[in-house]
Amino acid sequence: MPPQDVTNTQTPVTPPVAPQTPPVAPVPSTPSPAFAMDSLMKDKKFMGTVKTFAIYGAIVSAANAAIGVVLSAFHFSGSYSSINVVALVMAFIMGAIAGAIGGALFFFFYGPIHNWVKANAFLSRYIHDMFSLFWKPFLVGTVLSAASGLLAILGTSASIIALTAGYGAVSTGSLFIGWIIAFAAHVAIYYFYSKAVSSKLSPLYPW
Image 1 (cartoon, rainbow, N blue to C red):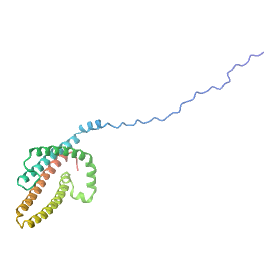
Image 2: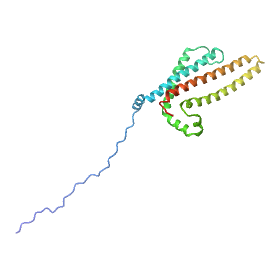
Image 3: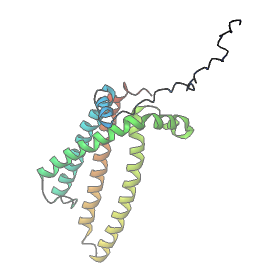
Image 4: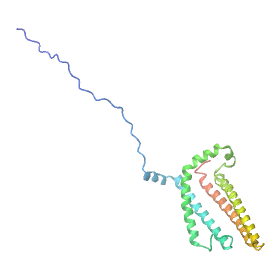
C-alpha cells in the first residue's frame, strides 16, 4: 500500500489587524490666570504703561482735590469745608489705583483705538499723535462741561439777584470767579498730564 501524502492542506489564518487611527495633534493648554499675570508682570511695556498712568493719575487726582480745597477756602465752592489732608491723601491713592487700571486697559485697547482713529477721516484730521489722543478729546469734553456749568451758574445767579433785589450780586460774582478758576486750573493740569503721559508712552506706542 503506497504511503499517504501527509501534506497540510489547511489555509493559514491571518490574525486580525487593529484599525489604524490617525494621530491626534496635541491641544495647546490654556495658560492659567496666574501664569498670564506673571507674564504681564515681566512685560516691560505693560509695566511701564501701568506705572506711567498710576503716577500721573495720582498727581492729577491730588491736584484736582487741592483745587477744591483752595476754592473752598475762598468760599467759592462748598465741596470742602476746610483743608482736609486726609482727603488729599485719599485722592492721591485713589488716583493711583484708577490710573493703574486705566493703564492696563490702555495696554490692551490701544491697538483697536489707534486703528479706528486712523481709519476715520474726521478724527484723523485732529488726532495725529499720542499727545492729541489725550489732549483734544479732554479739551472738547471740558469746554462742553464748563459751558453747561456756566449756564447753571447764570441761572442760579439771576434767581438770587431777583430774590434779594440785587444784594446777592456779590455771592453770585464769587460763583462766577470760582468757575473761571476751576476751568483754567483743570485745563492747565490736564495739559500737563497729556504732555507728560504722551512723552512717556510715545516710545512704547508708535503712532
